[in-house]
Image (cartoon, rainbow, N blue to C red):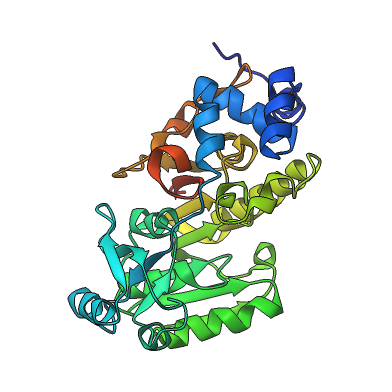
Length: 333
């Protein structure tokens, strides 16, 4: 049973929990930082081995059919004729898994024509759950390399006013290339720190936040040890600042979709808990075909009850990258 603590006490319990001998042993065996494994144990209990073992299996390639340029039936035929075997992902309208391919699927004629985008199922699901509305003003606060931005434009038939924000100049080239390759034009790209945005009154905001990347360990095993524990406070603060800015610039009644490609409480539930206690927002229940309810407590602390409306995706349970997804609505003045 959790207890209610002030913010400083919560931070200490979230960022400074003790590491058990079990976590140290498993971390050494599987090559992780021990604080990550300790968190897994606290969150998953006996399932921790299932996750650690599943993370040893390489991530399959998955694609999103771009039906703005080609029907998915036509794309299926084209890929089949090339000897590329694909399988529909049941819970994603445009999602397919590559079962077998004699070619690099990131270099086919169809890829270069913009007929599909290489994208993880969890990443695709974020935008479906966001449910972008046609003819709306949308800001994508961390846009490169453009997977979710292009999906927003695809689902709205290129009808929205999309502002794609990216801090790093080196990543803007890929962002622009992907949006152009896939046939879209209803966007502008801003090279800036999203925390400094002066835009106002957007209808919807997507914040696929910079994160530790713990959710992509199957794709990038270096993530097992790439972040010292001290980084988690810095990442959490950045995410909180970005989400606070999103609340500032969305219109009253507007929606924010927050996502982090991470299994860390520090980057999910605790970020949402802080904004719920400090800002004029409420959560919207995420109605997803897959996913677990977000955690209501961790290490003896209780989060705001509304955090339970968010969801988590786990690799070993849902076959996706690890993700935290939450929808927020700014309250009317």
